Image (tube, rainbow, N blue to C red; front, side, top):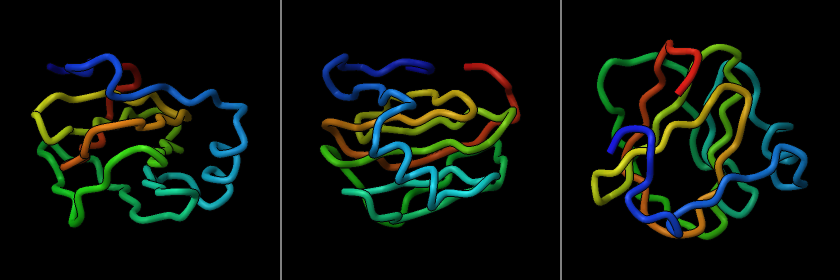
Length: 111
């Protein structure tokens, strides 16, 4: 399901003022989309693609944060059940449950 999560409890948006987001932003420079697990960067992506980039590991929540530092591009994450979530530019997304399997950066400015 594009733009949404199949199970509402599967993930929670992280407030941009939170300490975890600030720590993540400090180590994730523009123009990357970074994955953090318990505050440690476990991956970063920067290429705009028309297809999914499979994640080499299958990170899961809790403690997983996806940080999008791009100014004008959205990032889509794919869950193991096939659902997708869109992350707007300059924002973060905290995963509280579920497993991620892919990422796609789009040149679209909005979700």
